[in-house]
Length: 242
Image (cartoon, rainbow, N blue to C red; front, side, top):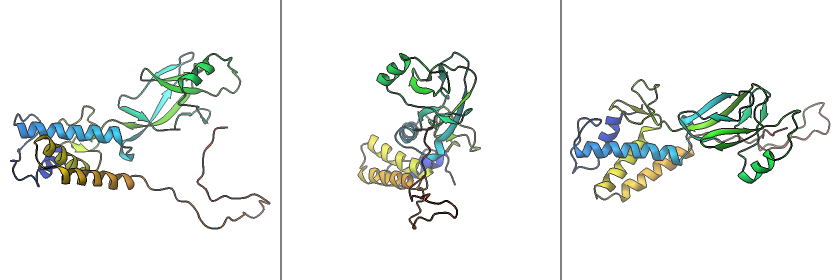
């Protein structure tokens, strides 16, 4: 069960006996509460920035407009998941992210308008496609959200981070408990080596188990009946662009 912000901060101080626990966090002017809130926000921003969590994975859809090449990203966009940009209308993978040098070559070369393959890149915090859309179609992509907590209902996102003591983390609570303990102890000049090691260990453990590993069949290859010389290779399936 997810712990609230207040419960996270309370548990973070369990092993720091020299500090009195505040009865509330958000809006409390007590220096301990102020520091705990700062640490909780720092942990959330760090976890979003440095790691890929399935809990933060989102799918976005963009509908193009004829002759327009730039499109806004989602308001909670942190970074795009590699190789997920697709022309969802024609079911074709779009080529990108395209480097500046390659983009210059593409944009200065005559475009074949028959069976267009669209290229994309990020520019000015927007998605830029080349060539500009010839007509209306849909683009879909997967991205990592920068929102790490919700309201007490567990579903309404907190776009600005922790806002109330009853807010809940979208990631496992022990990540925040150990992170807050580490950063709080460090900020107060208390021994923090053990807390840092525990925080790193929890991150590693949670990351290793966050997404199931792809199953690979190591059994001998079998040719289906009626398939002649068709060979089946025991390697993960890969979607390619045709």
